[in-house]
Length: 73
Image (cartoon, rainbow, N blue to C red; front, side, top):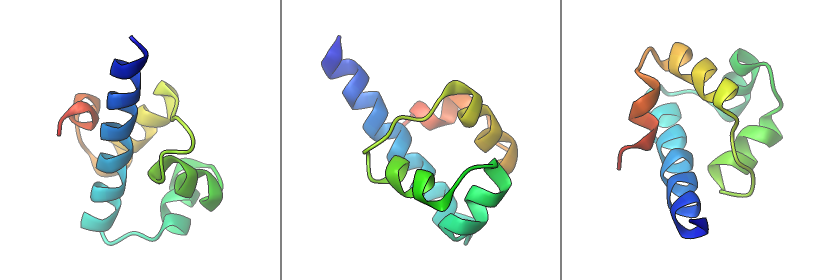
Protein backbone atom coordinates (compact mmCIF):
# COMPACT_ATOMS: atom_id res chain seq x y z
CA UNK A 1 0.00 0.00 0.00
CA UNK A 2 2.84 2.37 0.81
CA UNK A 3 4.30 1.86 -2.69
CA UNK A 4 0.95 2.77 -4.28
CA UNK A 5 0.68 5.94 -2.19
CA UNK A 6 4.24 6.89 -3.15
CA UNK A 7 3.49 6.27 -6.85
CA UNK A 8 0.42 8.53 -6.83
CA UNK A 9 2.21 11.16 -4.77
CA UNK A 10 4.87 11.33 -7.50
CA UNK A 11 2.29 11.45 -10.32
CA UNK A 12 0.33 14.25 -8.62
CA UNK A 13 3.52 16.27 -7.99
CA UNK A 14 4.65 15.86 -11.60
CA UNK A 15 1.24 16.90 -12.93
CA UNK A 16 1.11 20.00 -10.76
CA UNK A 17 4.48 21.13 -12.07
CA UNK A 18 3.56 20.25 -15.67
CA UNK A 19 0.32 22.24 -15.46
CA UNK A 20 2.00 25.21 -13.78
CA UNK A 21 4.57 25.37 -16.57
CA UNK A 22 1.92 24.84 -19.26
CA UNK A 23 0.02 27.84 -17.88
CA UNK A 24 3.31 29.79 -17.68
CA UNK A 25 2.92 30.44 -13.97
CA UNK A 26 5.69 30.97 -11.47
CA UNK A 27 5.61 29.06 -8.21
CA UNK A 28 4.99 32.37 -6.50
CA UNK A 29 1.96 33.19 -8.67
CA UNK A 30 0.50 29.72 -8.18
CA UNK A 31 1.05 29.92 -4.43
CA UNK A 32 -0.72 33.29 -4.35
CA UNK A 33 -3.76 31.82 -6.11
CA UNK A 34 -3.73 28.74 -3.85
CA UNK A 35 -3.38 30.78 -0.67
CA UNK A 36 -0.12 29.17 0.40
CA UNK A 37 3.60 29.88 0.28
CA UNK A 38 5.92 29.51 -2.69
CA UNK A 39 7.98 27.17 -0.54
CA UNK A 40 4.97 24.85 -0.16
CA UNK A 41 4.52 24.70 -3.94
CA UNK A 42 8.22 23.96 -4.33
CA UNK A 43 8.11 21.17 -1.73
CA UNK A 44 5.07 19.61 -3.42
CA UNK A 45 6.64 19.77 -6.89
CA UNK A 46 9.88 18.30 -5.54
CA UNK A 47 7.99 15.46 -3.85
CA UNK A 48 8.99 16.53 -0.35
CA UNK A 49 5.45 17.26 0.79
CA UNK A 50 2.07 15.78 -0.07
CA UNK A 51 -0.82 17.93 -1.12
CA UNK A 52 -4.20 17.73 0.60
CA UNK A 53 -7.43 17.00 -1.24
CA UNK A 54 -8.56 20.53 -0.42
CA UNK A 55 -5.50 21.97 -2.18
CA UNK A 56 -6.00 19.59 -5.11
CA UNK A 57 -9.53 20.92 -5.54
CA UNK A 58 -8.21 24.49 -5.42
CA UNK A 59 -5.70 23.60 -8.11
CA UNK A 60 -8.37 22.01 -10.27
CA UNK A 61 -10.30 25.31 -10.17
CA UNK A 62 -7.17 27.35 -10.93
CA UNK A 63 -6.31 25.16 -13.94
CA UNK A 64 -9.97 24.56 -14.83
CA UNK A 65 -9.58 20.78 -14.95
CA UNK A 66 -11.24 17.76 -13.40
CA UNK A 67 -9.34 16.81 -10.19
CA UNK A 68 -8.99 13.22 -11.39
CA UNK A 69 -6.56 14.43 -14.07
CA UNK A 70 -3.93 14.88 -11.35
CA UNK A 71 -3.83 11.08 -11.04
CA UNK A 72 -3.01 10.39 -14.70
CA UNK A 73 0.46 9.93 -16.09
